[in-house]
Image (tube, rainbow, N blue to C red; front, side, top):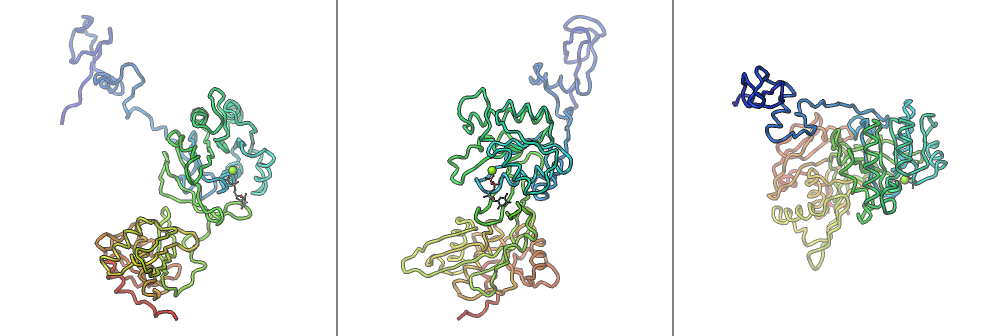
Length: 457
Ligand code: TYD
Ligand code: MG
């Protein structure tokens, strides 16, 4: 290993001779050359490597981590997604389609933080203060530390942040904010960038956590807020079927924590509520004994959720048939259909194929592969799978079954909800006591292992 390079400097003229010398080679003074150590030496070494040049360069080990810890918002599902809460001085973008519930969610967060005694500033761009107050009042008693600003110009917002010094500020929405020195209407790319940059610098200076609400549309044509995603610390998306009640909160970018967790909410008459038993949420209306139906424990973040995958295959006179999916990945289905044709001899390509997840759920991860294959096989045989069965496993192109993450956890949740048998890849563990777990190597083995019910009349 190379010895660390020593660095020397002349106390008199500041020169950096490469070796120690009794007389400085630059200014000829005697006994002024000395070794530099620590942070100074590291910077000098960087300069020697052509780096520093007088700029504020520091060796990374000398930079403090400035560790700041997230402050819980008190809305548990939000804190779960953020890895604890909102980091002081951070700026987050909350994106979602109009009407999905962004204002409701941020208002609930605001009321919750203010109820802890912290000061919160709402910047109302979309609704009048009286409307905001009326909405907030529906969510619970109004804490006195919850304030609203009825002005969306950047200087006014920054002045209010300086005056109030809130712990959290919510800007609803960033598309309504105006940076005076920039041309273009609010919501234009230049306006979005300029106002976001100004708010980011205010957030850092005042250690305020700012949440920017941004409207996204499904087709992406008006996807304005995307242009600020790289500027902010955290990008949250709020999704769900507007007609249905379920909402998913995800972090797609997060400088202060993981992006693996999912927050699950239900839109109720009294605002958004955490889903009480997410694992069993989608099984409420399930009818056991239907051909083409199978239950798969999928992972949403780190939580297992049991999803009913349904398939319907109808033979067509002129193949190939149509394919329609909901809640599963259509490219994945194409691959699985090819595997069924080639590895199992099941002619799904000669059918109209419909695959969907009941209740608006989604099963887009590879762990749902086996479920899709078995639901299709069950539909084509017109024979139901056992009602207490769950299946889970990724399917490879050779028809082989592959391991999936957190299988034990998934099977435990399935057991808790009354499922007593499982078909999983051969590499899996034994599963919960009391559950009959069949470990199989291929999809063909899976079909051979399962005792299908009799054909319904
Ligand atoms: P909103 O938060 O205004 O959506 P966004 O800010 O994303 O545009 O809320 C959207 C819908 O939610 C609205 O159509 C009414 C409904 N809603 C409820 O069902 N219950 C409630 O308690 C609230 C506040 C809203
Ligand atoms: Mg809104």
